[in-house]
Length: 306
Image (cartoon, rainbow, N blue to C red; front, side):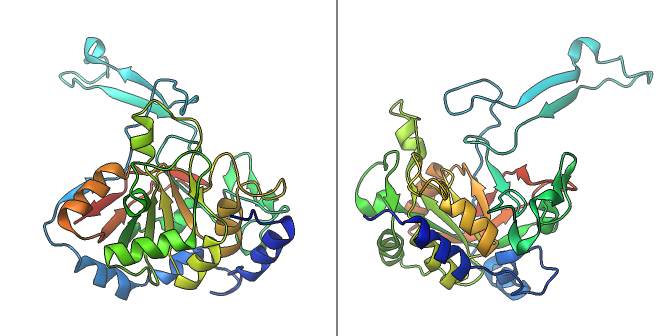
């Protein structure tokens, strides 16, 4: 498949901009597609009530795909349970710190995470993100949570393989093939989850690189009015399939032009198993990011309710 040129991606960036679509002060981007009516309709997708976590355990040990793990230590443990200064009160307390953005922790990217030529979503300057955080397009755009129709497109299942390999590209034909195979259609306000089999590939001992979406998928996502995009990788392939100016086009164009919140490193293997067993790939999707003022992202535990 042809690799898009810098000129192709320049034109795509301009063509897919949602800047001003929902007014000059908009900071929600494609989340505007997820209306109250669509949330209410999504609640009707619950059949069995089975809940499936879509997050990895928070990694606290270095590994090839998690070189900067989360820091977890105790502020008070069992051997100091009565050191709180309150007679009779015994408790443990934790401290957690982490690099939100990376290749392992399940997290959501706010619209202040990416810049293209010094601008973020809505044309706001990169200087609006300072050493103490972002002044706009923060995770507080999701302060009331993300609840809606989730759809899993299981690409390895459709291709008849266990997993894709590093650098392999998911195309529009793959997305539409999965729709046809699963009997679903991606529509306005959906939370689209695209699986390429990261966990199955990791089980073989190979964690170097990711499969991801071809840039041609971006206009398709824009036309379908997807609210949120998630992947078991980072949606972009690694090694990258863009150009030196556009190394991660799904992040650069998706977040900055479309206003598409991305969920990276989603744990999709168990969900794929449960969807296949149930014979249905749509469900109620729920996600409640932490309310972090000025945050450009947040670790999350998305949950699918079948």
